[in-house]
Length: 600
Image 1 (cartoon, helix red, strand yellow):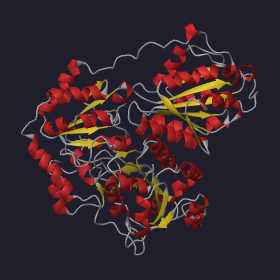
Image 2 (cartoon, helix red, strand yellow; image 1 turned 135 degrees about the vertical axis):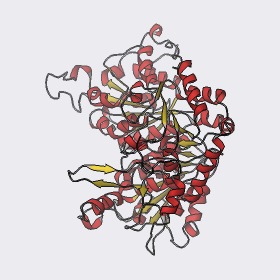
Image 3 (cartoon, helix red, strand yellow; image 1 turned 180 degrees about the vertical axis):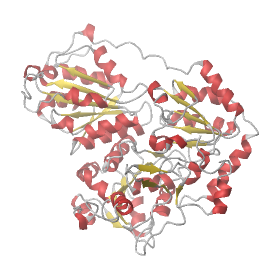
Image 4 (cartoon, helix red, strand yellow; image 1 turned 45 degrees about the vertical axis):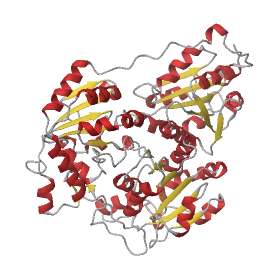
């Protein structure tokens, strides 16, 4: 066994044995022994702020190829941990692996509820983090390897999620565990499979259907989906993708049918709503996926839902005729192996492809004022200029995000990652840093609005000092376009806190880029990807590209909502996006809805 000088050395080596290769951190006194231990054992990446480190670690793990490398977050006590909360909550909402290790005062200085605070920077961190973590663990004195790794590994087990370890300062410096308590823990539990009778029931429903659709979510990995690419093509069922499963197959796959969502592609939404059977695999069918009018989701069909979390199957929305609890990937493998192509589906596949032709990703009713870049064709082109193994980060909220998810057509092995559930502004830059560090040799393309970008602007320092090949497209529409749109649509243009004129302080972006020595270009609306922009995209290292966007740019299609007489909100179902379609076109594309908009 290795001779250790202190428990923190031993603890960090256990993490290395688990495959952790990177530590994202912000230094502090209450983690001084842990910092000393990680220094020589891992790739250590300092961040300016704890939230940046946390978001980056989430996206590092989500974008890294399996078995290559993993990252965890190391922050000090008190505000060091509370600053991670947004990132932890976001990983919780998206079911993503994230290990956060936070310092704590000496065990003897813990207040234990007797007084409000005793130690400097002391807070009851485990209780603060518990609601958004799968597991929390406070280490007040050295504990065996098996106890540590049981908690750590739980973050990577289905359903994935954050794990938080609170580490008292005196425990870090304590003597290491005896050899007999530092042995490897028991092997991982077996995969929880959908029972065979459930698979048989699903196969019977698939065989009886005439308009089936597969909706593939985060619960299916890129590796499994891509490994089944040929078999899925032969099966002949249209495949749609949640936003967190968007990169499971490229957009030119024969059965690709789009990305439905409340801000989804119109053709995908309309096709989904006309399915007579939805097979949702590894998607929890959130309200954003089904629409706020979830009682009108799949109005003329039935739903099979496969999820590892029993509670998601029985939450009451949407309607689910066959809920199946178990591993989504194992179920997909079973279905592909046992389901048989039916000739009756070919007419349905042709109809789905016809919808894609009739309903372009860039709605013809969108308008862009002269002197500004039209974001729709620009963002549609991003996947074409990105390399076959590059990474695309479409921010996390606002127009830059939704336009990306509506227009991007992925190719080859490109990766597309976002975080939509919490939809925190400021997520994009930190996400891109994590993805870039996890994918050396690839470029990372970031699309982010100016208002959101400003919220984690400090991590430009992390980009610059590491010379990360992140190509930043900063969509400058003078503040918060989504807030401006809300105030226009629902409050008659009573503006507040949405742009410079109403109090939002934003920088001069060219001067900001120069401060960090990051090459800058302003995009020419007449030649968006030419000139200096083209040179920066082809160069090594980072680039900052300012994209002038019309503050009054329209963003169609979208799900319209209205305020009712009692002040509540009422939303249209997924297939009824704004603007309305012409009557003759509507008659063609709503072929299987009887009548249009019918509820189940």
